[in-house]
Every structure is written in C-alpha cells, then in structure tokens.
Image 1: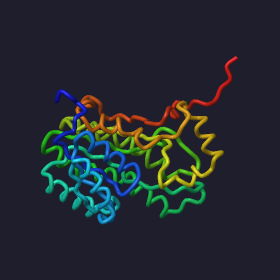
Image 2: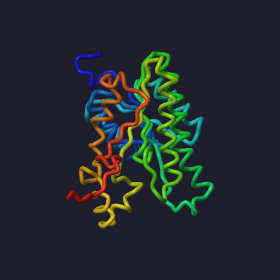
Image 3: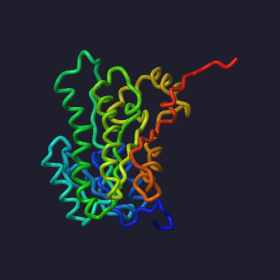
Image 4: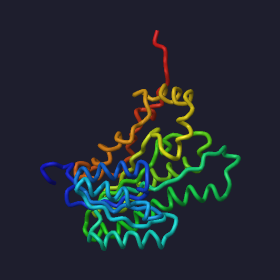
Length: 261
C-alpha cells in the first residue's frame, strides 16, 4: 500500500456507460485520483468530448465501443482496452437503463431490455475483466446498484429486480474472486437527477416530497459519489468486499417526518 491509500496513480480503470451522466462523474473522480481510463459507449464517437476532458486533467482516456447486451462486444471491448494499456485494475460497471411503467403494463421486451442491460451485462463485463485481473492477482470491481438494491418502488419492477440482483451478484462474485485479491462491491446511489429520471424532477411537489424523506433534505449531486467511488477503487478499501454501500442522503434508513411530543 502506498503512503496515500487513495492514490490511483498507475491504475487503469474501465468504466461502462460514459457517454453521459453519472458514469462521466465517476470517471472524472478516478482521473483526478490518478487513474487512466478506458471509457465506453455503444457509439465510441460520442466519447470524444469526454476523452478530451480527461486528457485536459493530465490523464489518458481510451475510447472503446461497448454494448453490454452483446457478448461479443463485451469480449472485444475488454480485449481492446487491455491490449492498449496492458492491464485493467479497476472496473466500474455503470451502464444501465430503466423502463418506468406500472407492473401490469410491463412487456416481455421491457423486462428483457432492463435485465439484460443491468444484470446480465454487469455479470459478463465483470467476468471478462476478472479474467485479466486474476492473471495479475489484483482487482477492484465496483458494480453500480441503486437504492432499489435494498428498497422496492412501485412502477419499477424490472429495475428493482435488476438492482436487487446486482446486490446478490456482488456478494457471489466477492466470494468467488476474493482469493485472487479482487474485491467486488456495490455502490448504490439514491435519488440523483439523471437523464433517465429527469422528468420526475420537473414535478416540484414530487421533489419536495422526496426531500422530506431524505434525512439530508436534498437529492444527490453527482459529485456526492466521488469519495465512495475513489475509496472502493483504491487500496483504502482493500479489506472490504461483497458489500453494498448506499450513497443516498440517508433515505434507505426508512426515515419519515415524525412528531416528537
């Protein structure tokens, strides 16, 4: 371990789903901590602005096309990233999607889209990267879950199933790969405004209701994930594995407004 266990200098991080949103914020956090990046999207051309941004921070960013619903695409992307740098030390399994509908309206294709992206994709990306990590007897895998990894919400049936599955998968993989000094943890964001849920935040009453249920009284801001991302990617978390860590302002406490007499 270095003098600064949070230092990621010399580490290579592969992050799925970095064309926008939280994936980019987590990528910036890792780059600022010293890591070079493999950045991915289904369309690698969309990654050029983010690549330039990371390079402006003094780090390297290698863009790769990756569709987590396509097994061949996963294998090819991991091989390209590994060949480019010669190693992959960190994986952030961030790519995901959602279909927001009442459960009676969910279609077969809706279910497959969400589960294939969020759960099957997470597993097979982790599997492909772990094969590289095992060869070096080192790795940090961060699966991105959600507050729905521990809570259920109406209208999010497939999403809750996928994120609950991510939590269980994380524990299984931690047990499988711990002998190779690979940690596997689940970072579970709470309510953050993203492109997927932006429409909800246009409803002022809903935002007020949400904030009332969050002990810190506000939705998450993207930079609220920085510290936990770097922690789980670094040697500071070397003895933590198989855990789900909510970054949710406390909403998973189940707290509600109460009157104390």
